[in-house]
Image (cartoon, rainbow, N blue to C red; front, side):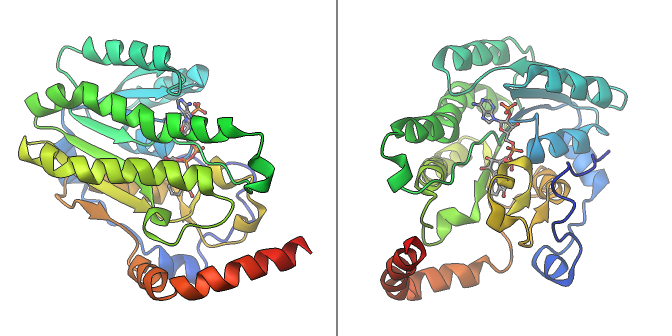
Length: 292
Ligand SMILES: NC(=O)c1ccc[n+]([C@@H]2O[C@H](COP(=O)([O-])OP(=O)(O)OC[C@H]3O[C@@H](n4cnc5c(N)ncnc54)[C@H](OP(=O)(O)O)[C@@H]3O)[C@@H](O)[C@H]2O)c1
């Protein structure tokens, strides 16, 4: 079951040559996926929109217990009604995961689950594109992005590690390709917070693996979701569909790969290393010109 792209995405390149080249199709082995998720409890944070929403609909065909969390509770209830027409069972939890009290409530809810959690998909996230000059009185942009993109998943995982160890479970982190490239101007709040959790997770992963918890970091390129709508420059750039991103995530539920990234990211990483000095010379000049 997939959902139609939302309004505003219709003029974005979908299946053009660039799209096909950059985001070659994923083949999902439904039999393997079914046997690896059978009767599992899967937490999806940020399930009310974009990638998390599509992942929930993709998993609707399997006999799993989905625990969906986001701030838009009514949207989650509506998804529950649709998904439960198929094979999955759904529990919804409405919470602002930036809020410590609401996080505690969610954790208490998770600890009430009799079988415990088997798979956590850390997907909830918030992005902000704003120049430093425009951020001088907006310190809250930085605390808020850290709260949702860093502190929330750290607290969630610390609390769930004993359950995940007992169930020999899995954690899938939805990261971004930007964490391994030269940081872009205007994206300081988002990129710093996503990189913080990416580093935390990569540092914790060997310890988690040693106690039987599998881990996967997924480095997504641009994905057509409501998150990118405010950025005009992205409207005509090639971007992966949210359904495709959901397939990447679902595939990691039956493969043992620890890292998933687009095939072309390596070239960006090399350019980030060898082109850094040029970048640091050229970009301030370019920004100065733009400001006039
Ligand atoms: N789109 C891209 O180009 C792209 C690229 C690389 C990585 N990613 C990552 O992919 C993940 C999913 O993003 P998306 O593109 O699907 O964006 P999206 O459509 O905006 O979805 C974000 C989800 O996070 C939830 N969320 C945001 N703030 C929350 C909060 N304070 N408490 C609880 N839930 C919250 C939202 O639900 P509510 O608003 O209902 O709370 C929503 O379900 C993010 O981690 C993002 O960093 C996206």
